[in-house]
Length: 130
Image 1 (cartoon, rainbow, N blue to C red):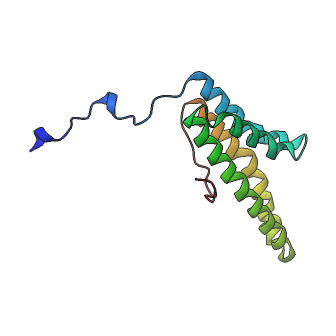
Image 2: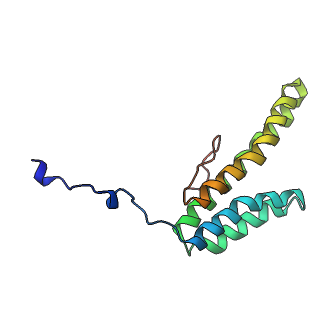
Image 3: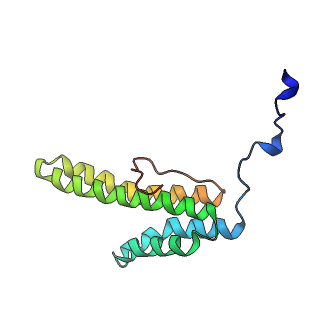
């Protein structure tokens, strides 16, 4: 019976090929482009969206990173709105502080993972774009 099962070698354990160096670089830029928000607020939303729209047809790897990032960005807008509302009962101020830490730390982690050729789904992210 074991003869009928395909043998798995170290070469067949990866289901997708490793991304190229250029794809890794674009994925890093994609994740770090959210920091342009601090210079020009609207650019923090437009830059990642533009990069993803241009590069998504060229690479499935970049398409996956773009979807992950955009889902996270939309989720963070929802969390921000909830924090603002919760500021009325004071708990929102603590949550807002945590939100500010998260929007700095998570893109850095994702960029590091992208530099290693990995996709990292952001925690606490709703899935709007699949």
